[in-house]
Length: 172
Image (cartoon, rainbow, N blue to C red):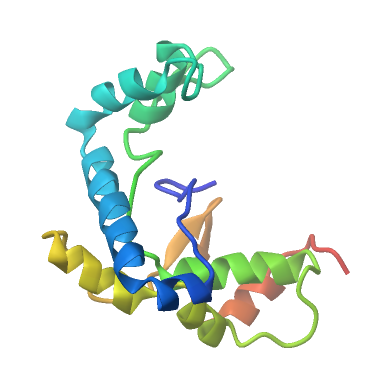
């Protein structure tokens, strides 16, 4: 969808992280550590070899190499080289939560008014993530919000309604 977009998430119910804070913290640190490892291009080959077998993804190594390295045939006779096409980032960007909410609203899965910022900050626990990342020496971004270019369109999380209204196609 956009360069470096998240393809996977780690989520738990509110009761879990409140009832088992140490377990939640350990899980988050493990995922953040693995994500930090996967973010580094020099580690992609080892990851590909580990996840290709049948007991994981059951995919040919060349297919995974194309995904993980960003070097792939475009189907039109050209080879694209987009090394940052896929990335790994352990930080729960609240701006991405706002974007996801705009799409849910766009396609009428959410009805009525939405306090995008409040929902994003309740669900994407950036403060907790920042603390857990610091515990293992991973630097988190200074802000929880950033502008993103998604499918060629700039998304400003401070203006979700404006972004949402900019689409000609939506479910009414």
